[in-house]
Length: 183
Image (cartoon, rainbow, N blue to C red; front, side):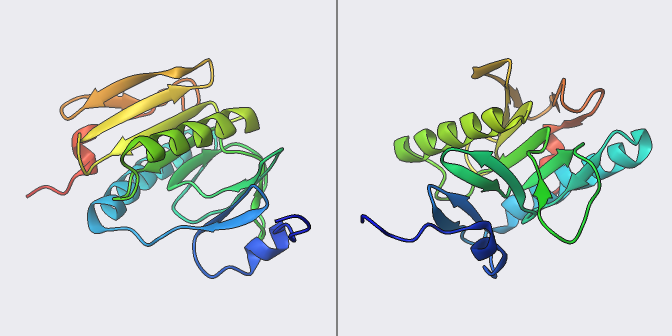
């Protein structure tokens, strides 16, 4: 619609749920399920320990806003992230994380979802993210690791394997098995 008002970062601050600013619109994300939340928590916990031990950056969990300046995107809200961009304030973080994690939800499957995820990865890389994890705990139970240096080629890690995030998070890895509750 011509003349429609474009959403701004100030509008994003007023949203009471997880959202991103894409194409001038607020894109609100749906709540997630237990497997998704468990995987996000395990990744964040591992990254937090790494950050504290190495002092190379900070880990962030779900629903933290990262403000970027791309033609069609003004923010990201990854499921987990590692950031080396500077001081932390009460506002959204300025700049992209060096490592971003997107854990698939039930609606993240099928051709349209794949296209959307590819566009989002391209946006991450254009904003300066070096590595993006595409985590599937619902169907294939894999971690696909994409790098800015070769954005269309993923390395896939399966259960029983260590997934890594080189060069964004040097020396850090975690086993894919840790993304699932032990039964």
